[in-house]
Length: 292
Image 1 (cartoon, helix red, strand yellow):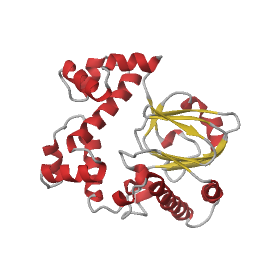
Image 2 (cartoon, rainbow, N blue to C red):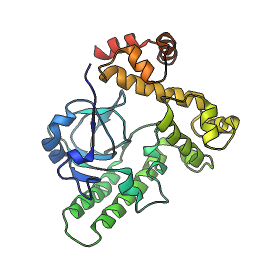
Image 3 (cartoon, rainbow, N blue to C red):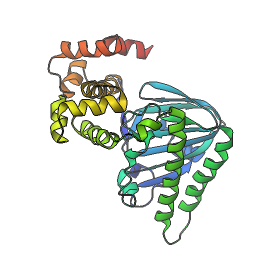
């Protein structure tokens, strides 16, 4: 099994503003970073990609999505992805750290945008034809501004990115029919819960741990989760653990028992039973199927 690469912006020569922001055309990005994108990998930053021409397949956390003109993809830090692209592919890509975005938009956290939820229903928007030119011009404006030597360059780039995210959120909500979730009063508390899970899911899996950190009762936390995502608190935690299990099973050079232990399960048979309950196959069967 191959060890999965984790890329940082500092690895990209074109990165700006203290290695916190990068923008390029897809064509140039592929040409200069093809060694990184031939294999599945992770990032420690947020990625937004617009494909304007060509076709292909984009695999994100073991789910495959079609690439076509007007495909807008969003990647959270830590998601595993790779793609297969046609030779005529074109478009734009930018990525940035959380701190780069939030230093100017401190009241609008990056996770507020629905396509960057940790449990995003889908990481892609398929734009209608009349919207493709609009978003293409926005991405091109970001790229052009990055080439300038002007006052308030970073501020203008951040403003353009914020505009892209706002308009993407409108498209995303319409496509996913999540208006009621976006307006729900529980959303902010649920996002705080998500952040805690990302920080602690390997060592803490009880709902009581997270409700205590949030200063609410386990019952109320469960009510929040049920209202926002239709799952219990425990279901959400375990699904996050098992997603990481899938990633590590496929790409890490560790035994299954080591992976289970690193995810907080000293008893491998118990971990295997949980895995099979959720995916209808044990870890060994998952590996064999994925390698076919």
